[in-house]
Length: 208
Image (tube, rainbow, N blue to C red):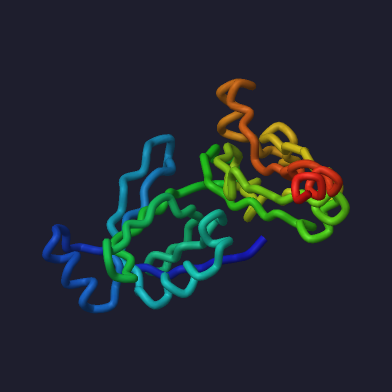
């Protein structure tokens, strides 16, 4: 599991004018919310991040599906990234939302799928098939302490004609597919090894 750290400061000014000023100063306005203290819901906090520090960690795919240590002033707490607002035409982050979590906080997250052994896949190497991805990421439910950086899908033994569904994925302990939590009728396909159309003899006959 990768470890990510971000530093922030409390933001006193509010409004669009203050946000525009911060962006001109190479800073990103953000908010951190959620969590409890003394049995009560904690209030949201407006914060500001350094744009260069945020942009650097955003280059790492794992940042989007990891628990992050966010230090506000001198106080550090655990958060996950919930939303990013980007400039419609420029490569700029407009605003960021973070959710406070503990290891036992139940969260919904969006994690990438990593397909391995595609080149050595039986259905491709010996069966002449082609791999078609229906999904490249997965919505999951888990405790923050069980949040995986990615879900691995091994295609080594997949034969031509194989369809791998959500229910076929080997999810880490404590991790559940959000779609399948709504019922088996949501068991959609993830990746397919498409069988070739006809054999060599059929192709030769068609050519003749």
